Length: 258
Image (cartoon, rainbow, N blue to C red):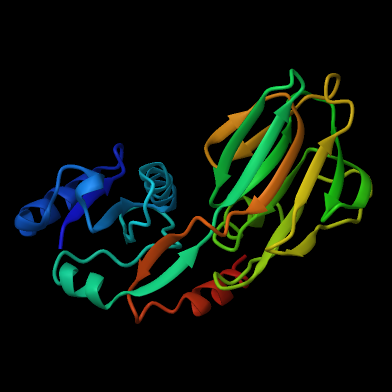
């Protein structure tokens, strides 16, 4: 088994853990991700997200086994130095499909970006954003006045989406969360749950005078005019979890934390 270690660069305990694993499993460690059979991530959820984006850039489905050396570590396993090879061999696999966003800017530029957690629209100035929401070619909301809007995957439902009072979705849930950020009109609209196979189009009304940024995880594209979002079923990402790690229990517990 060839292992590529990826640690949070600014986290001391992650770097120390990576050094310990590199020494313990020296014959199995490779210098490049492209030569690996598995990526072992040491850090938190943000580091895991960066690793998954590197796997996308690599162009092949390389499984990722996360070890929590960060703060929250919602999608990571408990860190233990011993027994790593057996843990990886016995790990439970979860497949993720990221969102693919196609963004058109006010200048006519077309950009594409992937969102493993979410794709969000955020106002760039003090003025509220005005967004028209279309799902599968049907206009569902002519005008949402808000600070922004989030389209979250199940994996991302416990991140920014949860902070905006969006719902938590099980990892195997075939739905997406559409969650407004500080909605002004309609004031009581709290969002929607959409089938994961739907086509979502978000048009920014008066995009020149009310500029909006489109953000897919770490990629920000400013002055968006329209954003088309779909789950990319052709692209698979594999997370590895210890069999005893009860993700359903973790998700249930998260919903009762105050």
